[in-house]
Image (tube, rainbow, N blue to C red; front, top):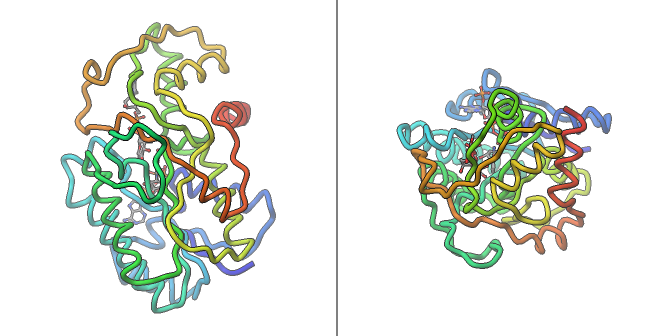
Length: 283
Ligand SMILES: NC(=O)C1=CN([C@@H]2O[C@H](COP(=O)(O)OP(=O)(O)OC[C@H]3O[C@@H](n4cnc5c(N)ncnc54)[C@H](OP(=O)(O)O)[C@@H]3O)[C@@H](O)[C@H]2O)C=CC1
Ligand SMILES: Cc1cn([C@H]2C[C@H](O)[C@@H](COP(=O)(O)OP(=O)(O)O[C@H]3O[C@@H](C)C(=O)[C@@H](O)[C@H]3O)O2)c(=O)[nH]c1=O
């Protein structure tokens, strides 16, 4: 397999990729944590590219604290936009293909239909805005990129909604969870498999792709499913967004349409309930 470096390797998706590569016993993946490759430091990135001369660079690094980003727009932008620009420049210099991960939060949430890659973007928070700025910069530097927009990532690794629910569900008698935000959860192991598949098959159908699990749900129904499958008897109260105050606004509807990914990448996508079962059984 062609050599790939992974930036942000100690995050949730980075750890999933490590698990997939280990399970497949595949060589040629170099996993770099922030200490080994700081996306906010061009010299540090250059040193990684010079050492490894990779065919692929997978960018799993990001500023993902959605509420905190509202108070730290500069830091968020430095990582989600400027860091991506630095990576794109190095990819151009080294002839490297960039696989970059983006988010459903580039959309406003006002759509009435599942969002396709060509639908208008209009982020409603700083995290989404800086992620969009990062994606938009890439084509200015290189033609050989995959931008994979995904949503509601969870897994046995890192911090995510499933792990938060399991913790709170065991600590509390009752939880209030938003029912009027609709989207699709994505098992980060499934996304890691897709990234691996793109490299393994030497796919050159570059561009933006949407990838989440199949189906759709609300955070409320997702929480209910987590508790039912885990046999946790906590009471879950559905609340409106207006009754659950958060610093950052979130899109009300961000279901991603995945026809392009299925056709061009040659993948089958599991339903979110199936993947949730798989994840919980591995925890
Ligand atoms: N989580 C989600 O629900 C969703 C995530 N995404 C996107 O998917 C991608 C992966 O997300 P996920 O794995 O969940 O996020 P995590 O927050 O788990 O991981 C992000 C990683 O980025 C690293 N990082 C932050 N700043 C730097 C830096 N300056 N240099 C190098 N590394 C840095 C962090 O390092 P450290 O551990 O040292 O802090 C962390 O390991 C991101 O692009 C995210 O925007 C898209 C949709 C949903
Ligand atoms: C903990 C909790 C959250 N919620 C709501 C708040 C929010 O609308 C939703 C999810 O909350 P979280 O803070 O876990 O997740 P959040 O940070 O909003 O998740 C987002 O992260 C970024 C990185 C993305 O790119 C998005 O796709 C999305 O996954 O659930 C409740 O209603 N009740 C609760 O007890």
